[in-house]
Length: 354
Image (cartoon, rainbow, N blue to C red; front, side):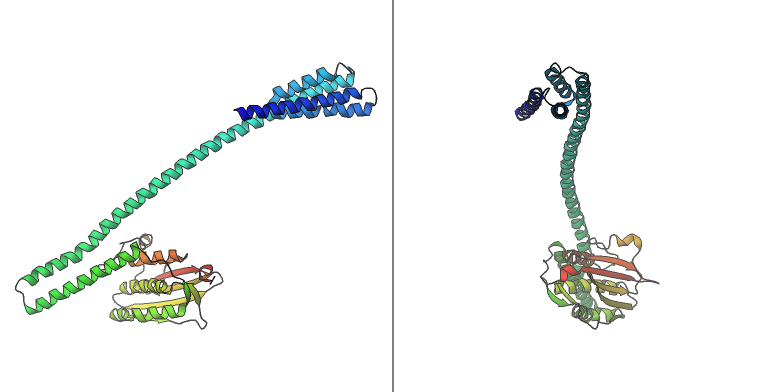
């Protein structure tokens, strides 16, 4: 490495220059002042330490030997001999310490390079893993979609075949009802799929969450009456301003509400609650249904996962997307003695008008 060799030549030149300067000063003041001479002899340690740090124990010993050869013959007294021995000891000890630190530094650099290579490999593996996950998710989505479409298509095909033949007037009305019902089911499935596959980015505006929840109660009332489910909402006395996408928040709460309604075919109650804290806004949708078993909680937000015969399995998946787009989180709690509670927590910073 030319740069490294050039740097070492410069370091060697600095050591030699300092050493000859100290020797020259020592010889020039020899015999004039013992105090000055003693100070200059101590200065011999400087180039030796520099040589030891830069070139290891060999450099330290070489500098000590050169210093001794240059100044000891001119003043061969007992103190000078002892100091020459000290120079050799300092040069060798400092050099060995420097060599050990240099070896540690080399090992650290090698370990850093290995870790860097391992990190790059890990990043490549993560990219391949994400690609594999996307392919797997696409395959699962296609399989689930095919399964969900197969049932209504079979019903439509059967009803259409019966309508082609001679059937009683009562059956004619029943078959057309099946066609309408299954067509609506396919339409709802495709709408949910589009909402999940290509969600609209949030358009943030100032909203009062009390108005959003009240609108959800009105929209869900027909389905609730059909299932004999009662809806309860006691709005807070003070406004709860949220800087959010009001339509998406309404869709989120409506999906949670309809999911709760459909879980109580024999009737029940749904209670809405709104809490405004210092760092978050919390919305609760609690029902008196059968609850969600622990083994199902990790899957309820997966696309096409449903336990309902007529469900699409996309409503809660869309809810999860909306919460993520609003930088919030959604939790599922079990109520006692039975029932579920969905808790949507939205950070205050997201709702602050810029």
